[in-house]
Length: 204
Image (cartoon, rainbow, N blue to C red; front, top):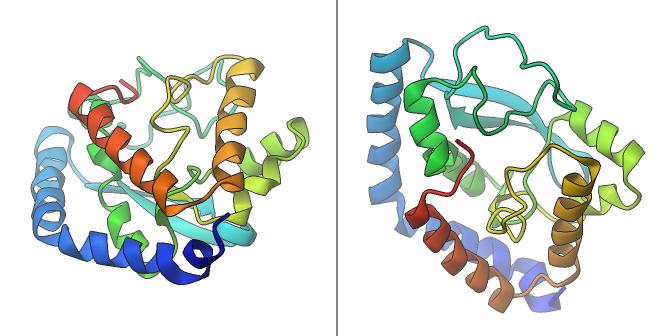
């Protein structure tokens, strides 16, 4: 990890970029929240405990994309995970997830310092414990702040949860990022994120 970037540059860039984009994302979140309520009722947002840097627990916020109170889909490795074609996802939620717009409220958590713009995706405590028991080195993901986007999130591996090999591939990408956190790497991931969003290649 680049020492200057690690020691404060990354955090300063997170705050500056998020604040600069606030006139766009703040009203967009408000409009999308109204869309969620109009199409599937309240609540507009979904909150869930996640594991952040150093193992600290925080509450992650998303626009709600699933029916309230829906039972976990059968056959998954973890109840907390969703997947492509998950029957619990609402029609509006499927569109939000396709373009990853459901994640926009987390920009407020970037400002709070709970997340970074770029980093591994945070998992729930149960998933973190489960994967740490299965995969050596999994806890190394917690050495950096979790991200809104990241190397794994812009790869073809993101959104695939079906097999242990899929999970191992995602971990490989996360650890590659943890080992090489630099300004150049973060900028490259942000550029790739724009392309991914334009293609609508999120989980559907």
